[in-house]
Amino acid sequence: MTTATLSLSELTAAATAAARTSAAASDAERAGWLNAVANALDANAAELVEIADAETSLGVPRLTGEVARTTGQLRLFAGVITEGSYLEAIIDHADPSAAPPKPDLRRILRPIGPVAVFSASNFPFAFSVAGGDTASALAVGCSVIVKAHSGHLRLSERTAAIVAEALRGAGAPEGLFALVSGREVGTALVQDPAIKAVGFTGSIPGGRALFDLATSRPDPIPFYGELGSLNPVVITAAALRERSVELAAGLAGSFTLGAGQFCTKPGLVFIPAGTSFAAGVAEASKDKGAHAMLTSRIAEAYPDGLRSFASVDGVDVVGGTVDQDAAANGAAPVVFATTAAKVLDNPGQLLEECFGPTTILIEYADQDELSAVLATVPGSLTATLHAQPGEDIAGLVEQLSGLAGRVLFDGWPTGVAVNWAQQHGGPYPATTSLFTSVGATAVRRFQRPVAYQDAPEPVLHPALHDGNPLHIPRRVDGELVLP
Image (cartoon, rainbow, N blue to C red; front, side):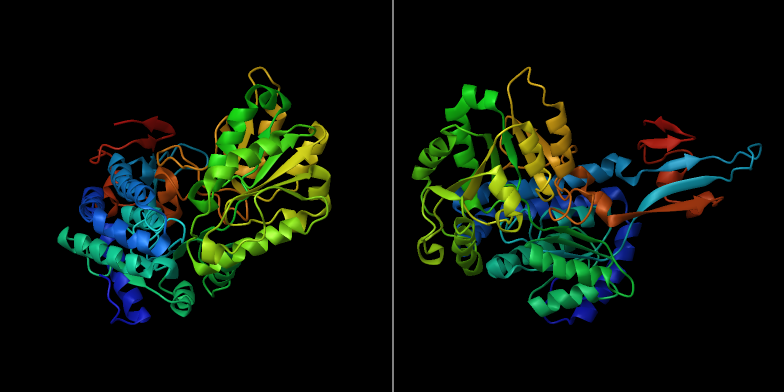
């Protein structure tokens, strides 16, 4: 199921054939495949973590937890498809007496076919070879070809070998899963006519280039990209009066977590003018230390981003130093402070993502200035609000809801639960679609609706049979019917 000896055209041809077989398989069969992969990864977790730590320097505790998250995702999707509501099965029976007469219509979501998945650098398990994109696509009956990330190539190859062996042992069709590597191969994969959708997690420039390729094909395809996110945080004056020390410690822990290489890192923090909060955050960040970054390219880019912020008149370095060699010595935390007025004057420079352990504290004079500067913030995965009970925050919540797919209250955005309610996606450039890449409804990206009119029951998916043999939730003649 994964071999370097096959050409890309051979891999996509095999994936096309496997997708047909997988689409015809039962949900219980596909759930068995996912559980087999999860069990195999758990059984080899120690080996995989050792390889991952050697390539990413993320540390054994963090990586061990990420393997558990990855296998948990696989098992979640196994449960999602056996529960059945993911099919969105709808039956409207014929009504000849209606004006005009209504035919029998039955609608269901079907898998779209072979999917390309691009691994992320910062989550070598959960957003990589066997991560959420792969798991959600396999769950609904798609085949998957993963493009390995160069930052953890050896891990990708070993993970792929384990996944392929587990799928084969569970009875999945050959060609259901494959791994490729190399930038040129990745570009060709997006353009291959057999590929029907792309999942991507990475930088804005790289993602945008692939997004444009996907949409400019003779047959454009969906590109589900997670590109970049500033994750704004707003702290009210009342919250700062009551919880300044706690908030400073929480922020320091969040923006430095994983050397600031989380897609949900709080990069912009809006605070009332005239406080000492910036000094508190700088103090709370002093003991965080420097840490190796994921790749040499990321490490080299981090100081460049710091210097870009520092070059803006009116932006102060209140913690750490911009003069650092992150490639040689690791990335150390840096805290910047400025005003909303400076951000409004320099949005192109200050509203850029700097991947690493840094954040910008932005003072606002009043609610009008806060609203004005928030209006310039690009789409993000998250937005966070720290306020006190009884404050009138309805307008602020509404504005933050327009900026991000997940709005947090009195917490920090680093850390993404994997469950039914999660939304990990936001307005561009956070993501290129409306769907989540984390949680149960991530499967919706790799399905398309098909309606069958006056169809004989034997040709219909069992979910559309009148007797509901799968015992799943359905909408019948306008009413939600539970099993």
